[in-house]
Structures are given as C-alpha cells and as structure tokens.
Amino acid sequence: MPIVPETKSWTWVLERPCPECGFDASTVAFADIPALTRENIVAWSPVLERDDVRVRPDDSTWSPLEYAAHVRDVFRVMAGRLRLMLDQDDPEFENWDQDATAVAERYDEQNPAEVAFDLQEAGLAIAEEFERVPETELGRSGRRSDGSVFTVETLAKYYIHDPVHHLWDVTH
Image (cartoon, rainbow, N blue to C red; front, side, top):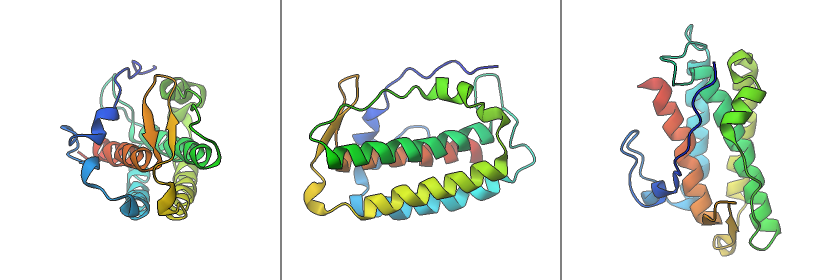
C-alpha cells in the first residue's frame, strides 16, 4: 500500500532546528558534512539487520527498509546535484519524486543486505565528493524546479538533514 506523498518543502531546515528530530543544519559547518555522512552510514547497518525491518509502524509511515532505500537514493540524487553545480553555471535540477521512486523501485521488497551495501557505497561516494569541493566553489548555485535556490554549501546542509532525520524516524 503506497504512502500518501510528502508535499511540504523542507528548505526551512536551513534556517531553524527541525522540531521532530532536533537537527539544526544552520549550525553545521560544510567541512563537517563528510563525517556526519559517514556516521550516518554506520548507524544504518543495525537498523537493516532488525527483525522488523519490513514492518511499517502504521499505514502512513515507511518501514525501516523503505527509509533506508530512500536514504541510499538521497545520497545518489544529491551527489548528482552536487556534480551539476560544480560542472555547470546555475543548473536546474531534474525533479525527483521520491514517493514515485519508492513505489516504482519497490522499496518495501528490496533485500535489506543489498540496501545496506548500496547505502554504504553511495554514502561514502557523496562524502568523498563533498571532501573534494574547494572552498572557493561553495558559493556556486543550482536550483530546483520549484524555484528553491541552493549554493553548494546550503545544498550540503539541506542534504545532511535528510539522512539524519530518517535515521531518527526509525530509531525513535
């Protein structure tokens, strides 16, 4: 059964702490993004080994497996957006419908061990990409189709909230 799609814009996490998970992206230094990503990757392994990894807590919430598959794809999508920003002047990002992806890719049916492997691989890749960004490139811009504009630095801060928040979703 599909989850009702998320419709709110989360760009406000750049300005204030998240009232749900408590993460405050506005206080995170760009240089800390790779380490925070690696810490997050490690924390997903025990989640994906849980007996209830496929169980949705209710009809409107993803299972831990679905959240993990989503985080894996967040790593991949955001790495692509980062590359675009570094390679092009003010690119517009292709729209990504995360809810349609969850259904099309059958997140709920994926193998937890494969998701764990792919999440780690994608997470390490984006952490390395953020480490390679020269400080002089942090102000490069890119934008979503909804008009939200990001710099490399704000994209990183916006991005890191997502895996942190979803880890909180499955551990609290």
